[in-house]
Image (tube, rainbow, N blue to C red; front, side):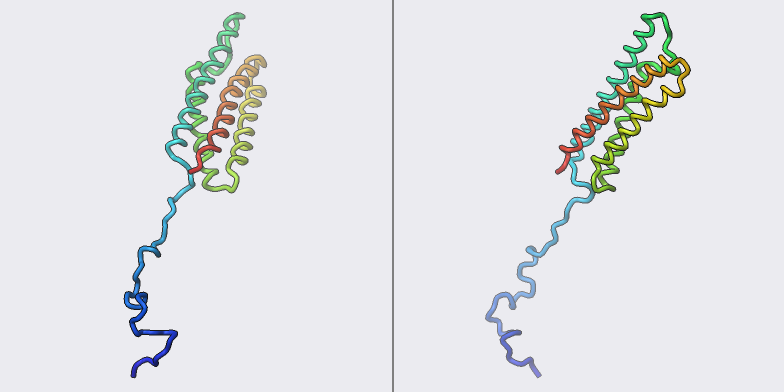
Amino acid sequence: MGQPDSRAYSQMGGDPGYDEPYSNEAAYQERREPRGPAIDVGKFLGSVAATALVAAIAGWLIAWVVEAAFGRFGHQWANGGNTPTMYAVYGAVAAILAGLLWYLLLVGTANPQQFFSWTVGLLIIAAVALPLLVTVPFLDGLAAAIVHLFIGLPILALTGAFAATLRR
């Protein structure tokens, strides 16, 4: 018993598409998209490193200026024993953590730039307010708040700026 002669399911061999079961298999290959967020990783890491460098220089420079200003008036800055070099390290670490935060927000949120700006902005406010509230000589607390502000603002501005340019 064979199949009925039908035009719908012709097995007669006149059509090349029926002679080879999967004649153009390569055309049906799935194109695989790269996994993870669509960013240029090299630019991202370079931008985070550059931001860390700028934050380190800003932290060192402003701490050195504040320390010199206090020394000029014969007053020692009560900064908890932190040197300008330590403020440079704090700035670099804060910038690297900000880059990590931006990446996590990119992976996990619909609008990473908005959440990043709010999060870092609120952390800068906390870093500025804390020395004003807990440092006993108010002038020393004000100086520490200024140093924290000068470390945080470049991180917020630079990370926000490079984040918009990293899409593949």
